[in-house]
Amino acid sequence: MNGIMEQKMAIEFNGALKRGTRKPIGPINLQIPQGYVVALVGPNGSGKSTMLNLMLQTIHPDAGEISWFGEKAKEALPLSIRQQIGYVPENPTREEHFMTAESAAKFRAHWYPTWDWERFEALMTRFEVPRGERLNRMSKGERRKFEIAAVLAAKPKLLLLDEPSSGLDPFAWKDMIDELRACLDGEDVTIVLSTHIVEEVKRLADYIVLVHHGQIVGMAEKDALFGSWKEVWIRGAQSDELKSIPGVLTCREDGPSITKLVVSDSLEFEEWCERERANVHIIKSRSLELEEILQLWIQGHQPGQSN
Image (cartoon, rainbow, N blue to C red; front, side):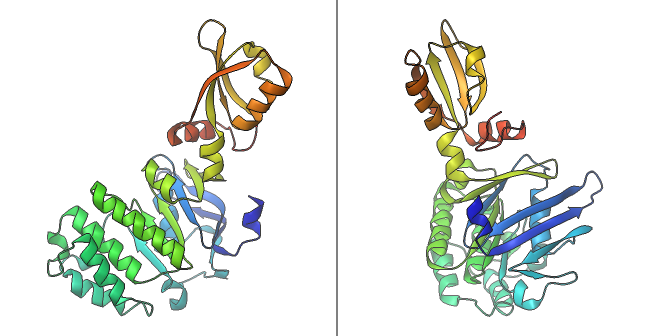
């Protein structure tokens, strides 16, 4: 995480707080570095969409502040910044419902000086979106594909995606992932996405931010989470002595002379087994799924730390 401090920031939350009718969101302290994909994950109602709306400035914080590319805006975002932000909401806005895809694209192109008509047409063809159909008559998947084509045609420097794969079939989902990856490879773009799709996180994210009950539980590199947190079955040691080993998160008996552990650093644990206890044998292991990692994270087990 030290590397983040050396990066330029696309978005910074400094004590940002939004009071709601049910519960507050924040105060949020978060830095999103430029040029990376950051996935906001957490249960429904945890505050992910509110965070995206704060980034888009469709709502304002009641306390604290937010900065975009190093610039702060207490009131309306300057047009020069707003034109660098693209947004795909979970539910399409109604303002364009009675427009066709082409007329809606012309309307959007007026606001984005970086609009790329060639890219838009290519994506509409690849996604097989009907150009002359009114948006409110399209299927959910067609409307979603139009939204993705339009936001990528705008060539934003900050791309906010709220459940981007909602309504997409597996083939369209793969096309979307491919286009987003191509965008990342060829342009200076930062992507913040809120998603429940584990494969989306695995394929796209550089960092994962866990949001729970309106709070940021933590931020971690994706590869560190998926590569290190494992469930391990061993033979040859007692549960009490295993609990004191650095990186062991949970420990319980799982049969005669067999103990099942969850470890936050599987390599370090394997080295301990070889170095300290020659009679301890690892029977098998498996990498944890994202949902399991998040649950442990919510319970207070931080990535890269032991109990």
